[in-house]
Amino acid sequence: MKKITIMIFISLLCLLSISQVFGAVTMDDTIGFWLFDEGKGDIAKDSSKNGNNGKLIDKPTWVNGKFGQALSFDVEGPFVKIDVPRVQLNSWTAMVWINPFKTKAGHYQGLIQAWPNGGEFQIDANGAVGVHPVYGGSLKDKEWAHVAVRIDNGSLQVYINGKEVIKGTVSPVTFVQIGIGDLYAVPAGFNYKYTGIIDEVAIFNKAIAENDILEIMNKGLGKVMGVAEVSSLDKVASTWGKIKIKS
Image (cartoon, rainbow, N blue to C red; front, side):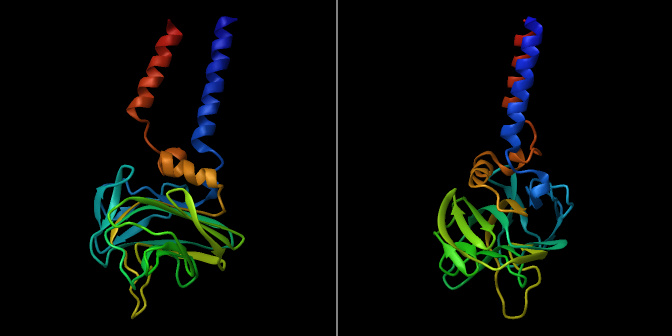
């Protein structure tokens, strides 16, 4: 009886752990997410099941990021080019960790761009962040910030470091060509190039809950989505649990 009770207790702990890791966001909710943990090469792997891998253009450099590795866009030019199946959405969420080298007056910097089909998630000319034409808050140069936009049937909320900074309305977006760090295909006379470090980019096909945004910000995208490696502390806890059960 004692052994059965222990097994039931362990099973409940496992279920609780899984629910804490995955929360309300699943792989089915993603257009794609890119951890940038490769550390080398010219491909940014999509860690979702959708296979929307990105191609590194003009050699952004691999550096240490907020979680694991990241990409540094040291000069105006490099970006990540991604082709995705065409989908038009009136509700979606996008988020990214950024460390901008310099927010430039009069210069827009692309973070996740689906232009010309809407979805211009970028730093505006005054250092605020949002989806055109709705921007809010302010970013500091050479400091990490988690920025997220949540669109629910056209109603937009912009978050910086988990705090809502502005609300507004935007048009539906068609995702088919995505540029991270710049436009996918830059028309003559346009300059949306970002300079700084980018880490943990995610695009979801629905308006995820604010609590999920906070969980991803605090725990890391890979861990919340269940694709991060088990940490040494987790391994120690698991080993200790086995020892306690045997004793």
